Image 1 (spheres, rainbow, N blue to C red):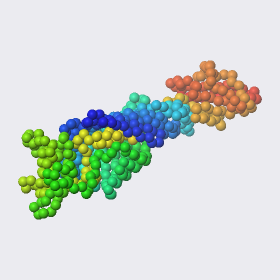
Image 2 (image 1 turned 90 degrees about the vertical axis):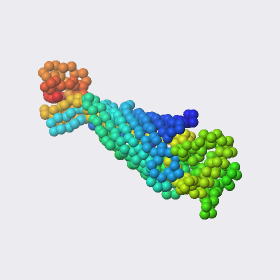
Image 3 (image 1 turned 45 degrees about the vertical axis):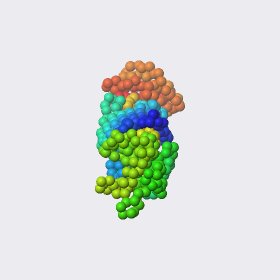
Image 4 (image 1 turned 60 degrees about the vertical axis):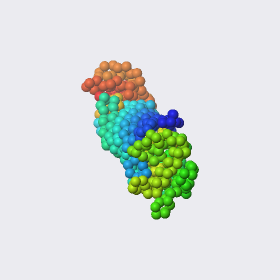
Length: 468
């Protein structure tokens, strides 16, 4: 949506897999200059699978991103080949966890001498990223346009134990766009940053594009990939004129875009300078000669006189130049170099096109990874002293076989003193179950627990369990 004549606001909404991303852009073309400013915000949310200490589980997150950029477009020229624009960008992103499936979850570390009962809250370290880079766009050939950006990124993970992990990396991205046929563009891009290495390819024709990408996560960020079909409702940034248009004779008063003029050798030359016959055109905008001042007396000519003057000067340029200057080379407005050249003017199509694009600097995935310091050891049970056949499940329940039917419990001691048995030890058919998660944290030197009773046949038994 246009805001006045020099600014636009737009959105881009992307749905892929278990994620949704929404982008909001504001683009402002500073009047009477080649500078264009952009502010972008992004919101990504959804689910991602992570390998936690207790096993694989799906976590749910959201992530905010922001970008500020400024770009300078070089003055309009008769040839778009060469450096077209340069820019500077700064951005940042931050992830937040909303929850995880099955949290919290217990798991057991089993060694030859002990069982360690561990609580895993399925917590992620929520990363924050900042970056800055410069970029440039250059037309290498009429049908080949390249982009390059280099800079620096930093990704920080805070952990539950108060420590932080900081990763720093050179940021760079490059891309090539090639026009093998008229109205068909093939593009390939590569981006390397602190959180990902992303490869993408695109085939575009008119307002339809097919885009595929693969993002290899770095420093704990998960891999991502996707294929998208894009339908653009906004028209092309620059129009492609017909190749068979011709102008009228000099002074005929017509409003066509080309001019026939005879050079001294008698060969006809058609000027490709576009003429826009309206009341706002000046001699500067007609030719782009910003370095040649126009006399004040010519700025106030009536429309008919100005129109004829413009056409006459164009005819001179096409016929061989003025004062010995070389003829201006023709511009192929159907070439990729011309179509991709950023506009210096507040062209609505150009502004809206940029306002509906996704900044490449925004991470493709969530900046998060499992926090290994968030797990908590509930209990450590020594295997020594336990009878043969004792087993433990993922919840830390230890099952000990007792023969003769359902046993009874007469004494429950902690370090030689009686202790209340509230859900810590239960009995079943020929088994005793120790619910180690319900045991209190062990004393500094460890605890010795004793369970005494009678088995189903009336025989006395005693179990000794050591924890630390």
